[in-house]
Length: 263
Image (cartoon, rainbow, N blue to C red; front, top):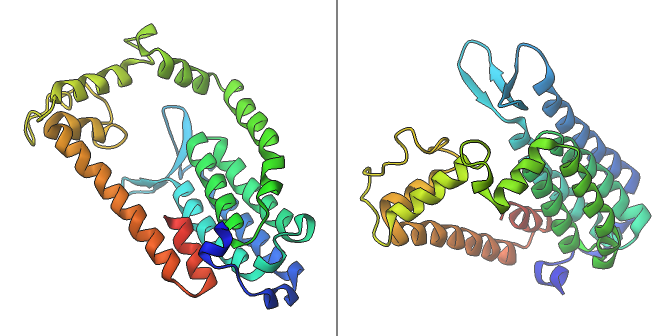
């Protein structure tokens, strides 16, 4: 029903060369992995807080995460593959497995340094493949393997274990791992219902780290209160609604799947 909602590609596509499509997908995924592997290259790779996620442009002071390139690149690749092979995705070995290998390679490489982004990339890719015509029960069979892999990625990383423990009880280490979360909650609580006023927040003055990036929402809540939080949530909801409308109205299979993946 989900595939019908977003328009399964015509069955005539099944006659196209599956090996060529799988090879193209594989080359695209290999390029993305190659770009991400540059984070380990001396001179341009940049480690922040022990994580190798950034590439630094020499002499510019500018850095970026190549996983962002992989994130949007996978949207394009999976949408393209789903449109080309939609009629054969219901076949596990010949249709779905090549896509899963490519997605697994890219998402797995991202997970080495960034668990959240890697899980996001893998989840979105699977959703797009289901919309393109893959069978839901094929993915259901792989859930135990995916869960075991996720658990392994967490328990083998002391940093990730600490993050989870901090989420459950930030006050266990209030001056260490739990500091960010406690200060962010203090920012939200300090804003109350109506906020301190735009620009009048206190937590951004040396109390709450990463106040312009990871914890920006806490600052919005402190300064603009419940109304500010509602506006942000409303904008995200409007963005999701707009993306789904575009996906439902688009007639070209690849653009339809691409709109879904971006949303």
